[in-house]
Each structure stands twice: as structure tokens, then as C-alpha cells.
Image 1 (cartoon, rainbow, N blue to C red):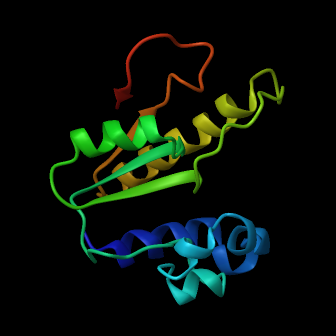
Image 2: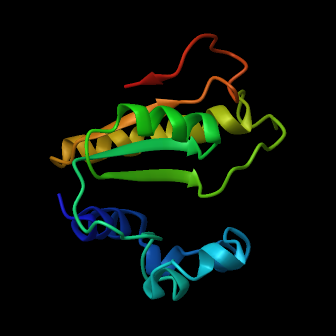
Length: 144
């Protein structure tokens, strides 16, 4: 599947041009990483930050891109892979209560729905749980 097709589907669903957060291009990138980001991401016209392979076999959906989740994705990946993430950097935020759940759990539910949405649109996707950040679910990484 072409990364541009996946990004186009998600950009339309999230109305990226109308709702893009200017803080993402300012705060979510290191100076080193900024050089590799697509110009359209800097211009807030797409959510696709990097497009190194142009085509991927699967999309993994994660809430946080921790070293633990990335290690598990790389072990499980069979060929080119796209990662959809709520936080596009290694971020360990404090748990904050939101609607009866932690900040991590409410974002996790949303990211899990992105995986479902992609699958419903014919794009292979799996949700990756990060037990390091989840205080409610013990055990190993689960790629669903």
C-alpha cells in the first residue's frame, strides 16, 4: 500500500489542513529530525512526517513511540512498515485523569480505533500496546 494513499485517507478523515496543530512542527521534532520531515508536514498539509519507502506492507498504530514499542514493531515487521502514533516522539507523560481513564488510556482507545478504521478501509494495520506506560494491563507487548 502506498504511504501517500494511507496518509491521504487519514488526512481527509482528520481534516488535517483545517485542524493541524502548529505546535507539532515546532515542538515534536529535533533539529536533526526536522531535516528529514516532508515539506508538506512542515506546512501542516499532511500528517505524514517521513516517507522513506513510498510503499508499506502494514501500519502499526501506537500511542507513544517509546524505544520498547519500536523494538517490538521492528521485530514483528515483515518488510516496509508505517507507524501511526499519537505522540511522534519518545514521551513519558504523567498520567492525568481524563473521563475516568488516564491520559495514556484515552489516547490508546483513539489510536486503537485508527487501526480499526484503516483495516475497514482495506489497509492492513495492527494496534501495539505499550505495557511500560499502561498501569492497568500487565504482561508482554501485544500487537493486535
